[in-house]
Length: 365
Length: 150
Image 1 (spheres, rainbow over the protein chains, first blue to last red):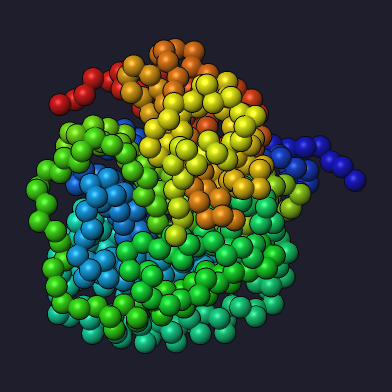
Image 2: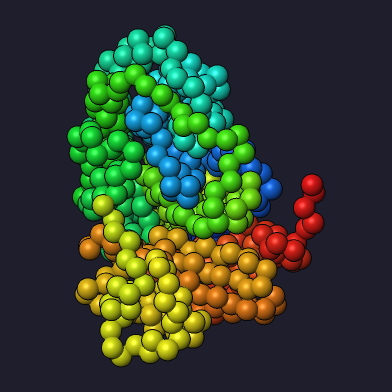
């Protein structure tokens, strides 16, 4: 039976849009029959601002893109700068960057998982479990650089400063506890009947669809395709550590959740290996305060928690980038929203938005 | 490792039936004219030796004398990547063919370039502003949009 179609504005101020995201959805009863995403509520013109700032100052702008994992944003940007200048940071700095980026990945996946379960109706409790562990990561970041969210820890040619003495024992105890906490989440969630019935088979996409839409990160890997820039195009010290790339099978909401949980385990293992391998040394190259790369261009990319995060930098030999284009994984991962959501109920749409784990700071920049 | 192809290797992939008159050779990127772009992308996407199945990034750059659209392509099968560049001259009514038919991932990226730089992508099914609202005047990422505050 068909009823009259109704157009509803979903967002921008809706808790499950994870920021200020607006969807114009057409409903037939409870079923979504059409949808149009509306972006731009958090557009701050980061790319334009970058053209007015020095190469080092731009790092602070990258913090504010994906604010749940500022470390990987810093990393992508400084790697592009280093590619542009053809310099390599000291090995200790590379280890510190990998450790902090993996901590950031865990922090971001915790938010992704927590909010997914929150959107499923398990109000607040699982989210607070996830925030409990995230808090400890933020404390580790505070030891590294004094900030918790907008970190600006990495610099072109290294990192801001060497680690304080209390960082290593704190990291060690976090690694031990996190293993247990992951088991705890899994015992509560992975086999949970409500989670299974709401997510298995919902909004699934195939590998071909995902690749064609340039989708990367956990969403692509959940379709069963092994594509992780840390293994296919290793940067920094990722070729010195062993880890697996978790993949799903069906590319549905459940697989995306599962891939994130498994990735957190792999991140823990990467950090452990880095802690074993890291040696004392310099953490920063002696570069001038105002960096002036030769005119040229570079595209640097990292595997951020959301997918491939790239910076396309063009220099004209001055102290600020001529153009600083960001390849935002969160925005591009939303390309298939129509294919994922149309045909499902409104309640499933909420879950799908949760499982896509996008961040509006990065979508709108 | 993902290997970046140089222009000679890309031309080799494009094959004999491709008119190489309109191509400038340079080191790591291939300059393509706007009318050739659809042809080039079709060959790069569909031939077995090329198989560029992942459109990584589309960027627009304002070089004042001309605009440039830069395509970063990756092949997940052969683990190689390439860079295509299209130069568009003039400051108004800029039109570039859309690559949406080859890679759906071009959807939001092309809309973003239209929104912020004012390059219209012909053939895109939903070519409208993405971040700014309809009726916004000008394209803010252009170099002449605002005088530098400093």
